[in-house]
Image 1 (cartoon, helix red, strand yellow):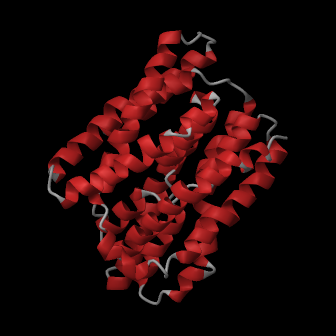
Image 2 (cartoon, helix red, strand yellow):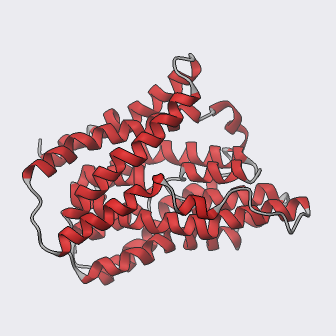
Length: 321
């Protein structure tokens, strides 16, 4: 069994297990919501910052990296346009339509797909997806959240309603420390300062802690019973995220890149399931949160049990240029 195959076990130990553990802790009231909130903050501000710093330090600097910010935006824009001009119009209630748009546009690239890229390609794949995720986050704050507010305002006919959250506070707070860490790591890579072996060792240990700290709270806040009604209504999102987007990504990246790690990492990025941020956006702006939750649940389960294993054992060997 090679190193990549051994890392495939992380799908169960680092991806599925923390989701199940989080849900069981909620169901049996083992921990509180306050504990989960603190865990999320520690993970973002400390663990993710260190992982981002180390992964960016190991980057091989090339002009190919200039395309990755664009992919961060396209990962939201393409499914958003598909949703707007196809299935979203079937939702007559604008709170439902807005929730559907959020579920379609926002993908779990940084956490779930980032860990999957690490499983397949190691620290390099993880770093590539963090770049894409960083610019997806920027698009989320600058476009998706205002769009969610627009749908709710239009549905309630309060067109001049102010945002319920401060964009300035979202952009400038301690949760943005991973961005600073990425910049510092990128500068070290740009100066060709070699990463010491201890850096790789720390990353390999810390990535498991980050997986649990990031996904355990997701399992805790997931409410399976509230989402069952909308599972069939969001089935078309599955087709878009796991068939349409990966195919588009494939034909674009094989034309632009020669690096198989970069090609494979981008296909994983464009195969990501619905992000928990879609649930957050719907909750903040009073859209139909159950639509986002059902899409999050169905796409995450399919990704973990079908899409990623299929990629790992079959597809990744077919995409080498």
